[in-house]
Image 1 (cartoon, rainbow, N blue to C red):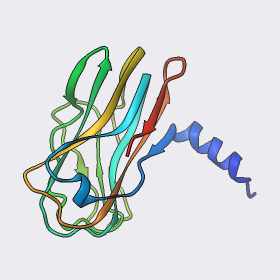
Image 2 (image 1 turned 90 degrees about the horizontal axis):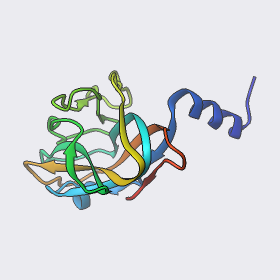
Image 3 (image 1 turned 180 degrees about the vertical axis):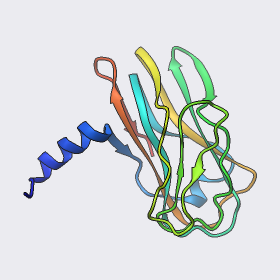
Image 4 (image 1 turned 45 degrees about the vertical axis):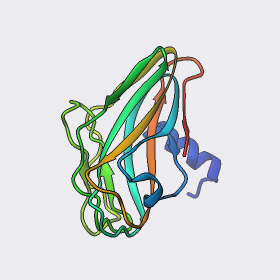
Length: 170
């Protein structure tokens, strides 16, 4: 049976959580050892998945990626969601840097080198925010600047408070 698109999207939301993703960005603009707020977070959510996906092949520039969060209301400075990843140099189209959840000391995992197949998923979702919180989920890169390629950041989540949302900020 073939379902119409709105039915397919509703089934997807129920099974994987709500999907939000940034627009495609150039690695030159965002992978240069700086903090970027990929998503605006309002309220309380359960974060189920979070990853960076290579949209086009990346060249050299061995950037390391770390996902984090921060809140402006109440004031909570940048806190890591994980440790830093391995090198993002030479990422091929479809390769992903996957947040695995759980302990903050866990590093994001790079997927298979051929791209297009993610053999790792989040094994321990986290609850972020609270009633009437306002903040963001972001990332920082370290060690080296990217030299080429494009990427996007993807997240899935479940709202856990009235009017909770996660909206792309890039």
